[in-house]
Image: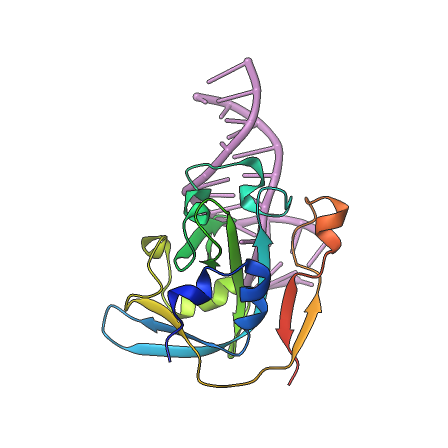
Length: 168
DNA sequence: TCAGTGATTAGG
DNA sequence: CTAATCACTGAG
């Protein structure tokens, strides 16, 4: 069953681990539907989190993170890769879950490429029919660890264990 | 280890 | 306008 609005408006530290084992679903422009199980996520929480894009305040790029939970935050990095995030929490609480990998594709940029996710889906409603997440009852065993690729953050946020992987 | 690649951002 | 930076990947 498709995840509802009330799921996404919870705090990112609840949503990020809960997304492990869920199905990321995408309807392609040619109507084909793809579903992949999420196996790795990371939480980015608020302006105080120095690893979070929103830590310098609201800009054109981070504006979507300030929305009410339940939409997609997609951005372009390193001149070639799109990354997919799920916006969580309430309005004006900049939070998002980075979907780092799904079953079959290890790496956040590989899954966006495989699922044809790009900037046109930035801000997309996850309750609509282009991009959404389903719960099929799968129970995942979780493992927490440090987030990847955020050396620029301060020690506290660099070392905090806000990355979750599956350990079934 | 390191280059590729271009949007985004702060600063003049 | 300029220049630095970057939540990555793949090749060596």
